[in-house]
Length: 364
Image 1 (cartoon, one colour):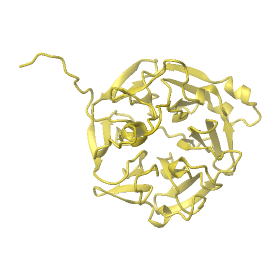
Image 2 (tube, one colour; image 1 turned 90 degrees about the vertical axis):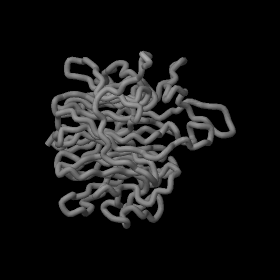
Image 3 (cartoon, one colour; image 1 turned 135 degrees about the vertical axis):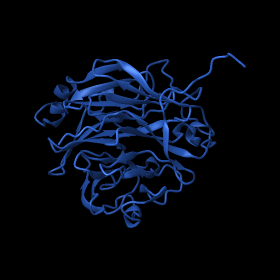
Image 4 (cartoon, rainbow, N blue to C red; image 1 turned 30 degrees about the horizontal axis):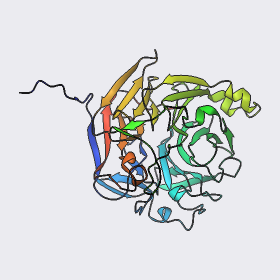
């Protein structure tokens, strides 16, 4: 028997669902009743519906196929291309629509936030963002909610224009930008910065041109258990940051005054696509470079929750009332964009979970 060292998994990763055909998923969210929702952005796969629910082992269009059949990129009554779905503390499902299939320039009312009543499976309201909040280059990435303030926070991860945080007053539907083009929201550009996934540099690799850096900015987002700080990270950076939520919501403050509340939270050990929080004040970070999910404890200690070779690009996380952390693994880095025009993804894409013995943050 060989006594050579091997890469042993850490943590017990449980398969919840495998996507054996169809498009790659990004987001996942789990309701208080245990319903599981997923979404599929339009990045080149054949996407029949961009929001779905897993029912009896099958993913079906949610809330129905009509809402998943847009009439153009500016349709206010249908999803155009959804990047994230999140169940809020009131157990409503919010759909974050980028309005940007294939990362196209957005049209007014393409980028929007749609609220669905899970008791009736009907759309309750739609918040369309005007040009002061959602720019033509904006790419809405992920969202978190604080119902005590009745606000939502959204990351703009665009690789074609300014990044930032969008704050939404849920009562009025008014939205405004904060940390607009702030260095903490931008992709890392320092010489020598090169993320490595599955042993290869993670770069855009056109079929007929030289490699170039990926420049996606503010992506992962999480809110502190007490609602006082908003955590965020650019996709292309090993650092992460936080900002005062009070400052984000105070429209009398200048951009510089808001920026003065930003804290550099340090090196997070690798590139992260997703952030999340639990009700014990612990922060979770996906780690795409090491097929892992890390957790920062309230005392600042960072530990590994799970490390497993099956975690091929852990993307979005969701803490559920069943005491588990759910995560999608979608092989994003194997897309043709990053592989010289060759699509190296292989089915299945996966939805996993790991027990954390904690529940979701409920700011309500």
